[in-house]
Amino acid sequence: MDDDLNACAALVERGDPVRFRAAMASPMAARRVLFPLYAFNLEVARAPWVTQEPMIARMRLQWWRDALAEIAAGGVVRRHEVVTPLALVIRAEDAVALDRLVQARERDADRADCATEAELLDYLDATSAPLIAVAARRLGGGEALAAAAGRALGLANWLMAGPGLEAA
Image 1: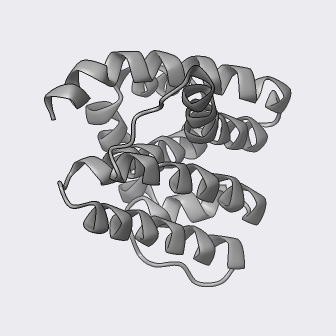
Image 2: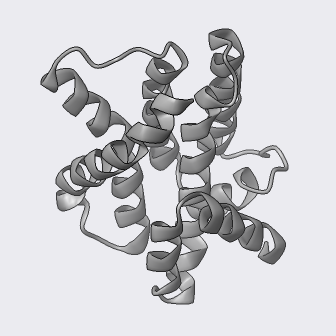
């Protein structure tokens, strides 16, 4: 577990340095929850952007959906530096919530723009709020604020990612 947790932390440090610093300011028990969740989020968020082919992007997203289904089923899960520690810190209900996050990323595979403010807010709610809700649930509370916090964090991340995504 420690090697996997370190791999998750390294992924988060490279891909989301702000979340990495926030997690490092947390107690070790919280880091064991946060690093696999944040590494999962990074891997899913980048899946549609590592290829120009929408079908390949959807295949990558399906791989994550399959991994979450294994976690939800409660049986043996695939060996993977992110999936293995994630399976140790989330429950079936969390896997279902995170699956909705993966489904929402299919919009990215299609390079679909949000045509209205409502579409953007729905996208942010689907891609950010589940992560915050699962983290809050696994850390012992704050789920009531997860939707608003997820939307706010999603909007901030979306604005920061804009120039890089445009260039890609």
